[in-house]
Structure formats: structure tokens, C-alpha cells
Image (cartoon, rainbow, N blue to C red):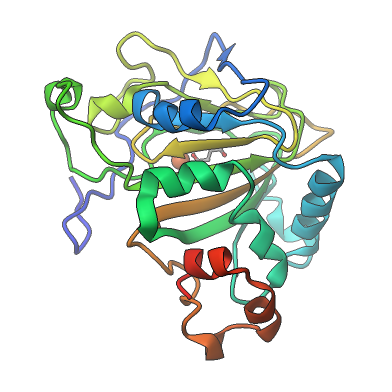
Length: 276
Ligand SMILES: O=C(O)CCC(=O)C(=O)O
Ligand SMILES: [Fe+2]
């Protein structure tokens, strides 16, 4: 077990946790129900917010992602896949602002993280054929908590950290969708040489471009293998938490480190999310 200086675990999975199928899909709600989405974060560990970006907004974000990071050739990783993964520089470019408080998504986030809800970072991620990711947790608030404590009806663990995935393709299996095991945050631990939990297999986040999936970091998840030689998968991640700010960007109250256009354009809600 590796521990970071703050005594938190750094291991997201152990051994072989690659899921090879069969692949079933998560249910995608047709409309957004805020109360159901909030409840989903506690019971299933995730929620899906449909139709957050329209077609024009999807095209705009894809173009923004294409414009980042210089020469495309450098992202073809030898013997692996195309992998363009760029950290979000919120303090350098006002174009990031609108993606941190997307309608519906931000209401779920502020409800689960409470008044201290913060953006802790983010990435833009374009991936191609050959890419897959084994089942893992992103972060556990307790290193490890016995499942029977978590299943005690008197216990409801707060959502400490979460990730929003903004999808920019109409997903299909060969684009390598995110996979996720509903309820697996109740395991209280990271997977070890396994890729199912409680008999539940990873389910694909088979959403449309412009849909958002939000999940707590204890949920077991990964990504199905991308085998699409024609089209790349586009996804933006935004990381949230409470009382956790400024990984990879300076909090906005350090205004001298921020681009002036970002400072001018940020709404009060965005300012607060960015540590203003
Ligand atoms: O790309 C995906 O679908 C999953 C990414 C992920 O789980 C991660 O970055 O930790
Ligand atoms: Fe992850």
C-alpha cells in the first residue's frame, strides 16, 4: 500500500482489472430530474444529465480542444494509441468558464458538495484506437472502510470529490465508452484482480454528444477499448470537491496570476467555484 504524505492512498486498483465484456449500457434518463440525480450520487454513486450542450456547443468545445496543445503528431503514442490529454488552465483562458457550471450539473454538484463546492482541476482528453482503461477508483476518502459500515442504514458518507465527464461524441462501443459499476462506492475500497463488484459488471456510459456523467471518485470505473480508426473520442473532465481547490491552477483570489479576461467574464458563481 502506497501512501501520499497526507496519509491518503495512492493506489487506484491492484492487479488485472480489465473488463472484457459482455457490455451492457447504463440507463440514460430522457429528462433531468434534480432530486433523482442527487439521490443517484448517494445510492448509485453517479448520475447522468442528458442534453447539457446542444450540437453547436458540442462543435464549439471540440474545436476548442482541437486548438489546444500544438502539433497533433506528438499525441500519437508509439505502440499504444492517440492520446491528447491536456490539463485545464482555467486561469489562462476564459473559454473554460462555461464548462464549470453547466446547467443541471452544477445544481447536483452544489447540492452534494455543499457551500464549499470547488473546481479542483480538469482535463481535455481526445483518445483514439487502442486506448482502454482498467477498472479503478479515482480517490477514496477513507483508506479503506468496511463495506458493512457503508451499508448500515444510519450511515451516509458525504460526496467528497466527484468528476464530471462532458461527452462530445454520440457514443458507440468502438469509441471506448467509460464503464462504471453502479453502487460500487459501497465497497469502500479499490478493486483487486477483479472487474465486477457484488456480481454487477461494468456498464457503459453510452450517451449522446452533449450529455454529462457525474460520478463520485469512489465508484469503480474504467474505459472500454477504443477500436475506431476513423473517429476519435472527445471528452472534457472537470474535477470537483469541497474545501479542495487549485490543483493545476491558482485560486482566483490570486488575481495577478489570472488572465484579465477570465477575471472580467467570471460570474459570481464561477468565481466562487474557482477560489475567488
Ligand atoms: O476516459 C474514461 O472514460 C475514463 C477516464 C478515467 O477514469 C480517469 O481518467 O481516471
Ligand atoms: Fe478514473
